[in-house]
Image (cartoon, rainbow, N blue to C red):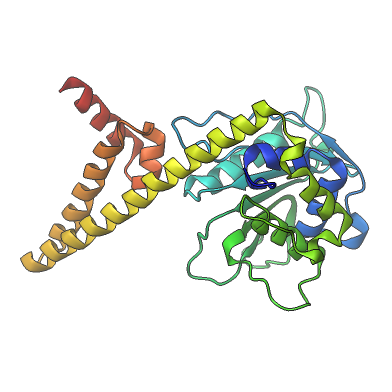
Length: 304
């Protein structure tokens, strides 16, 4: 095993950002906070409100939930595989964190803002070169008017490009850390090691800080991730092949319906192949089929 572990792995991510000083440095660099609103103290919060994800692709969990000296709540999630449900999940988690602040008899004025930070290790907005996406609740007619209590930041890690010396700001160093420190790391870049919080995070990513049980769990997660990647790659290949076939048939028949039907049948065929490997929710997310149709396919298979 390499001397370094992949820092986007759930176990490693939590080990590193379970240290308040590292998480403060990370959040202060990533979030759109004014200089006089920087985080100076953190307290970790439980994540009981997070629902379990059915099926195999358990790649979206609340990695860190904490509050700071201003009582603001921060939710940080490391997402390996992008799915269309990820944004909904982030909205759900942030909403739950907001609602659960209020105890019986308390006034709404006691509610503190919630910041949700999602780091995605896959590109999802192919129409834009931007890798930092900041969302807020704004007035459509006057966008400068913002309802401050919800802020959402999504970062596309693969789009982040390492350029010249101007990439010395803390945010970019932390992003380099997330992208560069993994099983293939021989020696971390000196620029990363020169910054004390990141140097400490790198140290916590070495195998020496993990028990045998933790390393076994890490290896299992790594194998599962490779298996899932193979399933997804196979799905994408078959989906493209069937899509092209459906389009060709539709064009040959001169009917739009032929193309649509070809695409629909391709999704069904792929979904049937996945029934023995994945849960219904995962299949629906990957194929785009409604969940109820995937459930019907599974029931048909069981009855045959």
